[in-house]
Image (cartoon, rainbow, N blue to C red; front, top):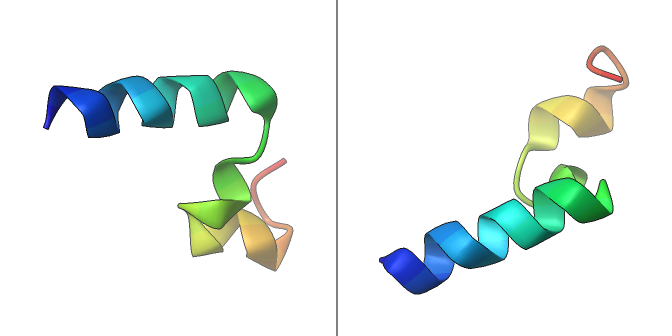
Length: 30
């Protein structure tokens, strides 16, 4: 579980959250 959290943090920092959050894919959340 920690690994997933760590990866999510890295992804968030990378701005590639769209891969995990389809909501961002909508373009509503910038």
